[in-house]
Image 1 (cartoon, rainbow, N blue to C red):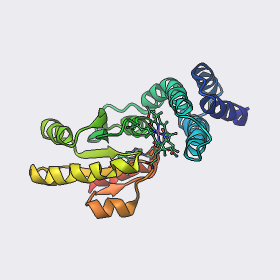
Image 2 (image 1 turned 90 degrees about the horizontal axis):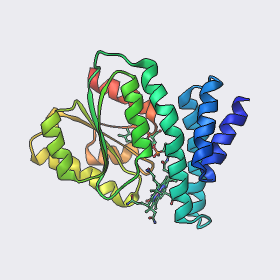
Image 3 (image 1 turned 30 degrees about the horizontal axis):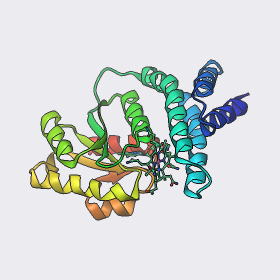
Length: 215
Ligand code: B12
C-alpha cells in the first residue's frame, strides 16, 4: 500500500498532474505515511526523473514547469501537516532563507524552511530571485541567527558568494551564520566562499542550523 502510494506520487509529478499529486498526497496522509516520506520518496523522485530527462534533452521546459507545479501542489497538502506536527512555541532561533538572485527555484528551500519551522525555529522565507543587496538589508532589519542561501543553478552560485561578501562590507558578517544549499552546491564550495555550513538535504539542514545556533 505504502509503496504504491509513493509510486503514484512520483508518477503524478513526473506526468505533471497536479490533481493526482494532491489526491495521492491526501491518500498518503490517510494511510499514515509520514509527510516527509511522501515528499522525499514520492514527489521528489518524480521531479528528479523529469529533471534528469530534461538535462538529457529528453523532456521539454513545459514538462519541467508542470512537474514543478505538480510537486508544489502535493507539497501544499503535506507541508502544513509537517508544520503542525511539532509546533513548539518557544523559538529555537531565527532563520532567514531565500533563493539567490537570478534563480527562481523554490521547492527545496521551502521544504528546508518548513522543517525548520516544525523544529521550533522562527523562519522568514524571503522568496526567490532575491538580490544580494536585499539579503543584506533584510539581515540588517530582522537580525536572523542564521541566513540560508539556496541556489539550484550553477550560473547563480556566484550570487551566494556575493551575499557573503556584501555582508562583510556592511559589517554584518559576524552577526549572522550563513549556510548554503541547493543541488549544485558542495561543502567545498561552502568552504571556498567562507560560508558557515552546507547541507545536502532538508533533514541535514535542520541538524546544521541546530548546531550553529547552539555553538
Ligand atoms: C522543478 C525544477 C524547475 C521548476 C522550479 C519550480 C519551483 N517553483 O521551484 C522550473 C520549471 C520553474 C525550473 C526552471 C528552470 N530550471 Co529547473 N529544475 C527543476 C528540477 C526538475 C527540480 C528541482 C527541485 O525542486 N528538486 C526537489 C527539491 C526537494 O530538491 P532541491 O531543490 O535540490 O532541494 C534540496 C537540497 O538541495 C537542499 N536545499 C535546497 N535549498 C537549500 C538551501 C539551504 C540553505 C540548505 C542548507 C539546503 C538546501 O534541501 C532540499 C530539500 O531536501 C531540477 C532538477 C533536479 N534534479 O534538481 C531542475 C534544474 C535545477 N533546473 C535547471 C534549469 C537549467 C532550469 C532553467 C534555466 C531552464 C530554462 N531553460 O529556463 C530554469 C531556471 C529559471 C531561473 N532563472 O531560475 C537545471 C540546472 C542546471 C544547472 N546545474 O545549472 C536542473 C538541474 C535540471 C537539469 N538537470 O538540467 N526548474
